[in-house]
Image 1 (tube, rainbow, N blue to C red):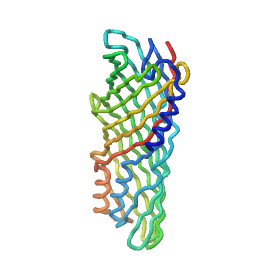
Image 2 (tube, helix red, strand yellow; image 1 turned 45 degrees about the vertical axis):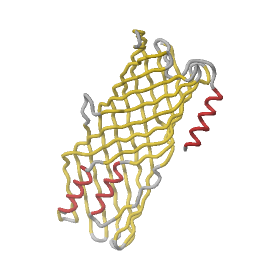
Image 3 (cartoon, rainbow, N blue to C red; image 1 turned 135 degrees about the vertical axis):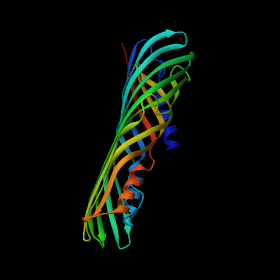
Image 4 (cartoon, rainbow, N blue to C red; image 1 turned 30 degrees about the horizontal axis):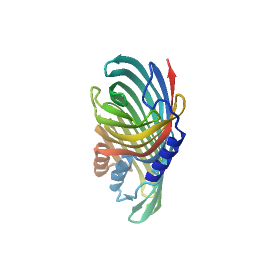
Length: 315
């Protein structure tokens, strides 16, 4: 991955022309942005699924296919309103959309059988950014910002157990959440062609407390009978992000960028309703594990390379 980063950065530099660098908005500007993401995604639902299955003495292996290419990532815009009040260059407002999809596969083992499992998973989140650009020097900019993030996950799993008991099962999990976050961006112009940049989410929730919903339903039909697990409650998360990269200009107003992204969203449910039934009998242990799997704090982890382009429209 490091070699890929260096190679693409060199290619971008060779294509660059002598015009203003990324991040330097001239006057009132609408900057349209779009990109691709190549990297890994691990969802908090993987750990929750693991804890949920322990009650059946079923051990889940690590989920496969967490690596992949996401075609819709960081699509959106930033609008820069020129201020020119000393070191305060402009104020900006932006909207960015991110979509990740994975087709996970994994096996599980129980005392007398093998489970074959797969799931379709989607993570969506959108960021509304509001901030200012501070320019201490002509080639260095600081962009403190407030980020309103809305996030959702969906997982639809299908399970097949080969052994004793033999089973088929369906699993559906959904989460939603909204949180207010504080962040800052940094931009340094190497020359009129190229800029190094970094972006951080530092603190949250802020102003808007994190809130959302969590729901989980799992149904199994086996040679030992039917079972049903259910939980529902609130869902909270906070985000930590580190991003750094470089951008160059290939034609007037059109910029290419490449960055390394690492992002964590620490998530958990709270005050859930949870219950578990084996056949017609209420399962105390199953209900306890359903509650534990919902309320434990786990991370959504995203890391990889993001590459794309921006285009400026003078307003």
